[in-house]
Image 1 (cartoon, rainbow, N blue to C red):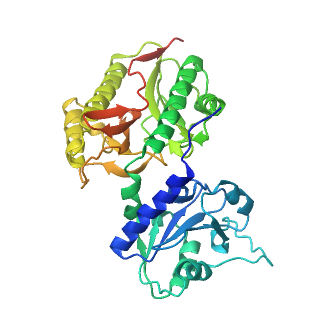
Image 2 (image 1 turned 30 degrees about the horizontal axis):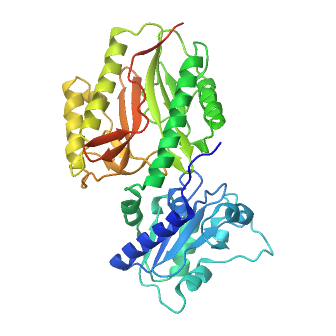
Image 3 (image 1 turned 135 degrees about the vertical axis):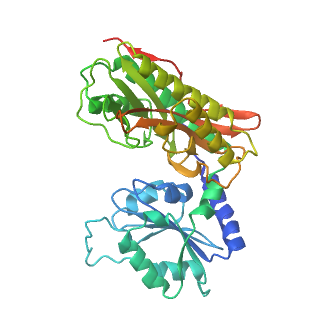
Length: 391
């Protein structure tokens, strides 16, 4: 099965773009840090996705990037990376902290010297700083001495926000797999299955269709407890009459997709039908607001006002969109405090979560969209209908 991928030359172009930004802002070195749950900053520049260990891509303002990995991943990393230089650091070892006695390893000091030559570090940034473990941070600050570690996520995020055609091609492929997986789940889900079993249906099908991995751990929440905005599936059986929300996303060459829909087992009650209708309308109305040059805060405020007018303002948790790309949830968020305007080829999850802490039920209506001149392209574009499963 042939699926699209990001070409090697695009990884090199990303390094050049961030180096230009580094020079503008006076950074000498930028460390892009990640782990297996959130690899985006590492993978964006190298295509390497750490497993067990953590990793980093060290980029100097001038010169070649260096992929920094843990002591056990050399053969894996060199099989996947788009970066020539690969160095092994004890600081990036797995959390059980093996010592690797006798193994020659690099240090932050040695890779800084390699990247900088005779130049002195005056400004050092980390993209992915909120992910960094204390062990890595301590090793990093010891090597830097008096030089302060600065959070530089935004420097990279500004580049990542605008997707290239290669990235969009991967995202469309992920969306297609997600649509077909969702179709399969709806055809095979039934009363008596547990939430965990339904997730098993989704995972098996998406991999059969060629997905690299899931975009995030999928979840299915049924009946009471479906008000959990972030969750994991339970060993809880679906019952007749349950409103169940299903959240599935496939990944292709590092690029995420997602679809969220609510399903009722049996005939939907008046209240269930109304909640689903509000979710669909809120999402459609918010997507219609995605116009190049429009204020993100204005879009978010429209959503708040719209949902409130429909009687569900107390169910709101966050804004209608968050970034989507190398992560299902990445910067930026469209919320009332946002300070950016929409640009062409920004990609978002149109993420409408409505949940009641009183009734303990909720749903999530979610699709992936891309901002275009004249309106948004819906990459997933899954049907918005009342899904009633016969019991």
